[in-house]
Length: 435
Ligand SMILES: *Cc1c(COP(=O)(O)O)cnc(C)c1O
Image (cartoon, rainbow, N blue to C red; front, top):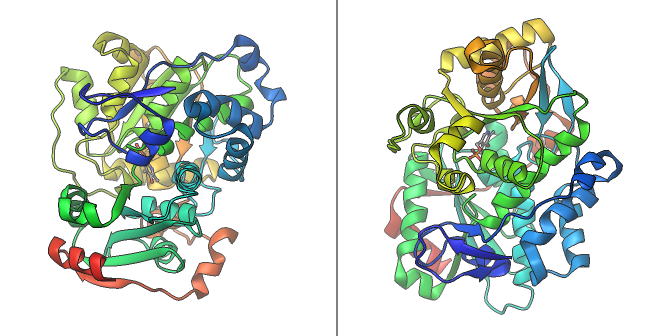
């Protein structure tokens, strides 16, 4: 498989190079040269396969010959080494729980796959690779955990001091080894600005081998398809599902659409957004107007210019009408999100996190709206994080406290280690060069 740049001004590369570079030299996103087609036989017999077999079968064409089969199978097995249960919430709505990984976030899958691929590609390297990542909470934890102990790779995470939840902070700051947490006196945007400037700084890039770990990277984006196959394996209803995806950078939903283009039956996609409504607006007006991000209670989706949206357009061959037929999008206000958490808990005893709640409201709204043509249909949401990661919002809404799941119990007694830093690029650069 080759990958071309969506800016069409760089050479095609294989999976290894696309994963190592992250972005093409012309700053475009890499996109697969063709979409592999899965056989009807495989899809209709999907229940007879293990999730490891599905993982290998789906990922193999994208990886091509850059990783030998036995190594790829090992990478896949480690990536998906936890459960992905499809749980019924109400008569017509299910939840695909993606929070059973080590950091309780769906980003574990992408981060684990990417880290192991980079570990493989760097296995003979004499120079260390340094992964830089800015986080508003979830990404940093998943990336740090995914890369923990991977040889030849150092990870530096920048997070805004006082603006991530307690568990999220512990997940970032207690790992040690090759993971360093920088606690920045500023906002998430400040952290992101420092990381962006670092990638542009020629002097720095000559001295240090820098890579990014965001969902632009094909090795993080592509394995997210697997969620949708695992859900299909568990889907017992007659008709194909409507799938509602809480969306920020649109990497997750874009991977779902890719799975669908490969043959996976899906009736309709809903891109569920918070107040950051660039895509809902686009679907109404056909005008794409990026805006500065607005802070909300579903903060992992506070994105004003979703980087993967351009890949979605490419999957629909730049045809607005086919995109509009297959995907709708809605913006949900914080107050509705909180109400949804409360109501779903009261009616069904299911605890949603704020991101899953945005998706739930969007799906319920679609299933009840006669104009959508989906009345009587069934679907599922992607529950992208465990509610315990957003205790303030969730506990307020449901009126009781949430228990810490087993995976994170150990964090409570671990020691936080962070380096406090001003939100200033030169300061950061000095530190990075002399540490
Ligand atoms: C990152 C994240 C999202 C958004 O996913 P995208 O792929 O960026 O659209 C949704 N929910 C949670 C909990 C996240 O961490």
